[in-house]
Length: 144
Image (cartoon, rainbow, N blue to C red):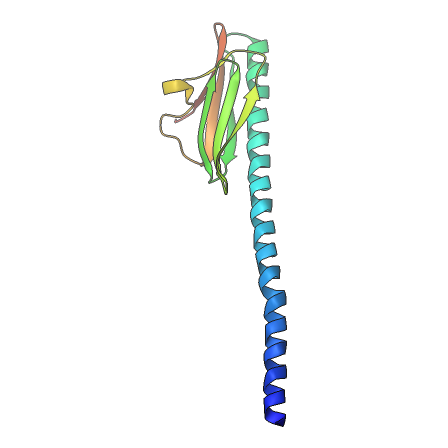
C-alpha cells in the first residue's frame, strides 16, 4: 500500500511540473517570436526613413547630386521598390508577407523593372545610391 501511495505522489509531482513547464515554454517561444518581428520591423522602419531623408536632401541640393548609403537588410527582407512618391519594403513575418510603405514629398523611382532598386535583390549589406535627376530622384543598388 505504501509503495502505491509513493508512486501516485511521484506521478502527481511530475504532472504538476509538466503542467507548469509546457505552457511556460509556449509563452516564452511566442514572446521571443513577437520580439523578433518587432526588431525586424524597427530595422525596416529605420532603413526606409533614412532612404527617404537622403532622397529629399539630394533633391534639395539639385540635379546630378548623389550619395551612397549602406543598409544592412534583415534576412527576412524580400524586396524594395520605389515608385511615384512611395518607397515600399516587403519582408516576411510569422503571419506572412508584410509591407512597410514610406511616403516622400518628392518623386522617387527605382532604376530597375517595376521600380525595383536592385537587379538581383538580396538581404544583408546593400550599398544604395540615391541620385537627383531631372524631375525625380533615382534609387538603386550600387554594384561597383
